[in-house]
Image 1 (cartoon, rainbow, N blue to C red):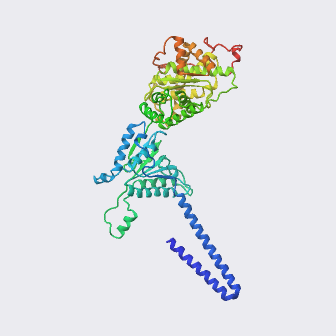
Image 2: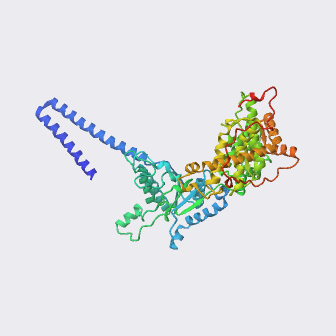
Image 3: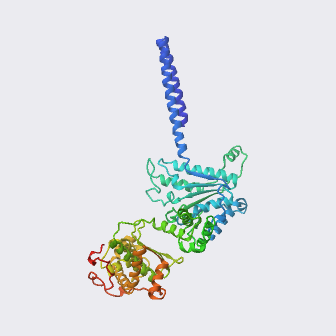
Length: 585
């Protein structure tokens, strides 16, 4: 209707111009009339040219905006196969069933079934969700569209809907040629968050609210549309040559997210993302498989084996493993070696987890000594109280914002923690402050993160897993902040109790603390093996099994406030030619 009105107005303007030109020629006559007529015609033509140019420009802008950032990959382009997807054999088994359905769409439909339309991949970053989608597409030999959910969003309302419509239109067209097509949408939670009454999920458009919700609605329609004919089929139906119902093309939408709990319920209903697959980080056997895959591609020494590397990387994702292996080659190349060693691998891990070494050359000996005792307190508590972990490194060299650190590595995957283990973790966090008070007679400000960690663990102990005198859970009262405020008196009592216990631990092993601090001042770095060697040389045995740590503070009345601690008899010897009162903080 609008197009028809525009044509009528254009004709009207043209005739008005011609009439004015003829009238001017008749009225004035001669050359002056001709020049005026030509001038009027030129004005009309300029006006028409400007209108046409604006329309073309407007259409072009919307055409480019509606294209989005979608990468179309035809069968065979990626070359990714099942042999390239390592670390999660159970995931591969489930994915192979999807490939079987995609390859046999026709026979499956002949049996009366319908092709699956949605698969949601959930899991932490770097676990291979997008790579799994590529493998599925390549193994099924179907086209594959890679899109990021945020790329559908636009400042203009409706552009995102056009992008979604365009990608599904092309997918249905390719599915008609190849039998099926896959659309992979990464970070789908960006547009698939739960809708709320009176508001919009996903943000605001340029001209009003509702852009995010409208984009989600469009995605819901495109994932589960009615039966739609192709253009050729519509023509045949118009000519009366097609009678059967329209066929729905096999378009599989694979979504990936780290936050499946925030997705709208309409996305998760049957017919859309009715299949969910959790892609988690690999276990020990899976990491051995991943390391074996990547280490075969590089030059390495025998010291760097997949089994040894897998033991050091509990909780690592395949993406992190690939990065560490590549960083190991960089470390080896920088030192002029022809192959990567285990030491290169270890240095790569430390740089990745803690940052580059940045020694503070201007730090005086007093401050180094304070840091050495701080970290030795952590190291002693870790060594004696955490049998499931091994000390990885203790250092007083600055890395990132930390002036020093004492780090452990789990010996294997742990899925449960007992009350004794949580209390041991609290004591490890408080051990640095306990060592400062017992051996230096002072309190330093380097315990900020330690106290925060201890408080969070104590709050979890009391208000989340019910290991105190109540079965109260802060999850039912509005969140952790409210729960911590409600439990503050009990948390403080628990922290004081654990502080007394860890003070006794470091007093009983005062020689162990002093030796570690002395070695740190001498060498600045100590490995877990060196810590164990110090203990064996000192006590003539390997570390004993730690006793089960308990607390009985909830069976007793609250403790009275204690006085400020005085210097212990186990105090650290002062530096040469330094009086105790001159030790820096």
